[in-house]
Image 1 (spheres, rainbow, N blue to C red):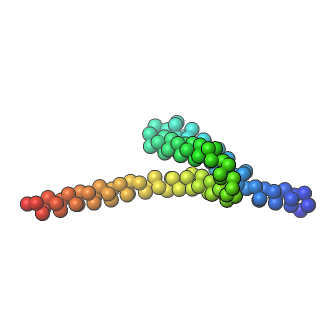
Image 2 (image 1 turned 120 degrees about the horizontal axis):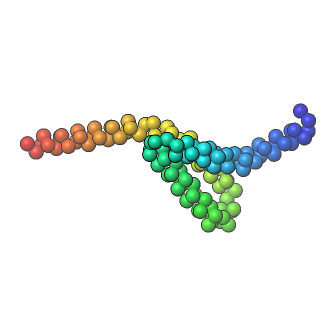
Length: 120
């Protein structure tokens, strides 16, 4: 491997957050949003609308407080990890949403039944 290739790889490694950030926070969510719009299910539309609202709020915060954020060098990395988390964790949360909702409904029903028994 030549010196030029090694230097190129070092530059990519040092600037990975700058290169991967747009792919993680824009390209994949845009693709998934288009796929969600094409389906008939409103739940995936709501999921990606929530993502874009959060992304917009974070971007507005970053633009508003850019001078203050520049003082902290690690903020760019934290934002990249947060975007990655939003994109990767969301499907896992949605898959367990029905289970959690079912448990909450069962617990409410059980507590209402107990109260009704105690009243009689």
